[in-house]
Length: 327
Image (cartoon, rainbow, N blue to C red; front, top):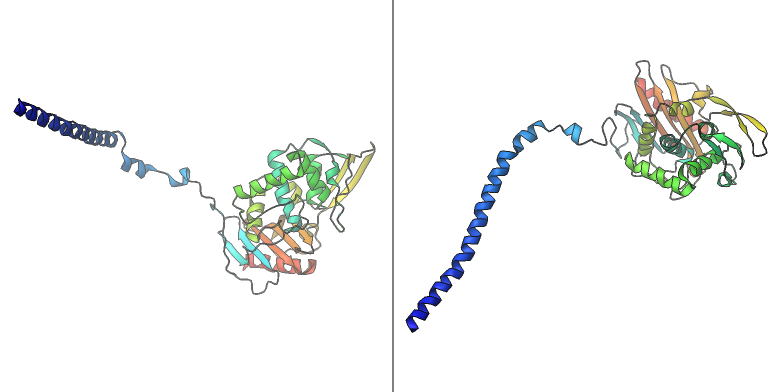
């Protein structure tokens, strides 16, 4: 009887060992079968051989110059930060192009970009109280709360006389508030790769946390040029506007572009045409300018000059940059 019990225990022990071994073996066989099944169902080598990298991974730097801290062909340039790039992405000149700088009213390029992207040009806008700018020396379009203009007209007021009042009116209309519109500006900057840019307002008046780089401003201007309507505002020398004032009377104004190449006050280097641009000036930012120019062959270039000593120095440095196009 005792021997029978012992033999029964041995059998049970063998069963306890055998069952887990069977389970492990079944899992291994199943895994091998699944692997073979997947290999026959999905040919990885064939997939890789037909993968179109350009179609499936869209590089942010396609047809864009890459940022560099290196100074390139700027021995004759006195402005603090510059860049000259063809719209095909060739870098011709660069100086401190990734250094954070105050953009002044070149900020308004992004203001216009966001307005064109999200706004309707025929919208009638009542100028809000937030449009009032009291800072001494601030550039204005001469608007008052209660005035009624279209978004199209406000964009001329933004880009030609560089109206800070127009900037705030646009911001409130598009964003619901200035703060929300500024968030939209910063989101757009990140979307296009301008990662060293931060906006605190829609007009460019100085704030220590409101900054960009020459390289980022090139990216922003390049993006704005993709909308052909942008040239209407950034490439027009003067514009006559008529709108209804808060008291119901009709107001007629003539706005003139601050870009002296467009107005003919400064000669453009031979063989080049300046198509569009935006100026900017504050004590902190100095004199600034971003422009798009075209040579006789139809090639286009974006040039940025930040923090020149004064307006004369600004155009002297920008013209030196433009001469490099035909070297």
